[in-house]
Length: 432
Image: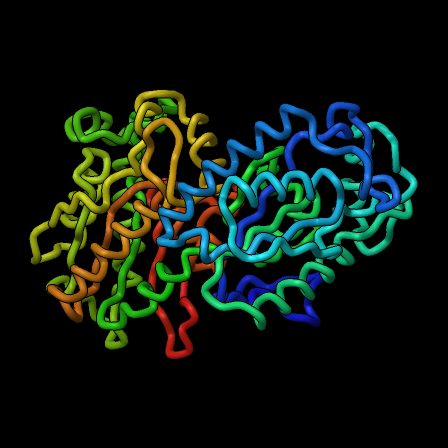
């Protein structure tokens, strides 16, 4: 499991392991409580009242179509689905539509553990009062301020349910139909972070789907198999695109343009010195003949690699590999860099798709791991420097920290010319 029964308040990302099932969360469609902008969390108020609006029903129908696509992407069918819902009316109505649209074969399962978080004294208040509870979740999460259910209480009931499901099923697609806070807190458990950090994760809107359990476990396992080489990921130095705050990913635009600035050149020289110290062996000797530099073909990376290669005096020629190229931003190429937030938001929902024709997260990660495997097979025993780009290196760094690659990317920084070593110890922990 991804969390310890005795450690629910301080989840440790290093405790994550493989799940026996795939888990998805779907928030109920728009309900009468949503349109009324009121908090409805007591069972006596929510079990039989405040069902879906007509728009909410449409949202759920659309979610079912998206879910069909997701099933196909992971090689699963409706026969693999176990649909489990909160017993609140808005969730039951959502689950009923999903059950019909997806043609689920197994019986619909109802679990009280998926009920709305109880907001105590704020029942029937306006929804702008939620923020008071969320602020208290951060400041003093173990002590309710409005007689609300604490995040830890919600996490414990979810933990119990997940434990039962993991023991009961294997290789199933388990879809939870539940409420906003409940699914946000559940997400923290799959991500290995603290339950009271649930508001730091992109919010799950009515009728939205989140792939809960896919934490790119196959990627980290492949990384751990790289035992014959030491790899060093290096982000390119400051480039003209960084100064202009632009997303630049296409070969056509960046193979001969958007090179390094003067500062970027200096950063690359400094990084070369840092790499030399890291690459010096136990004999306190640096062996340039054992160092291979491989770079993305984009100009800013090639210029960085060239400076590093020359300063280290490497004997092997620089290799260019398209698999190290910047994440492809699709229609967002040559737009302002803040547009990457649109891609990161989709990363949290489904790592196999991306908006605006951009490259999906799993596609990017897979090509990175495959090039490392290929280099290891062809250059066994070499110390390999990979010069690449920010988003790609950031996602790998998140994985090496024991976090899922769609964890809040603002939490991890990869500055220009940062060095990320990849060396696994005998116990499979990453030495960074």
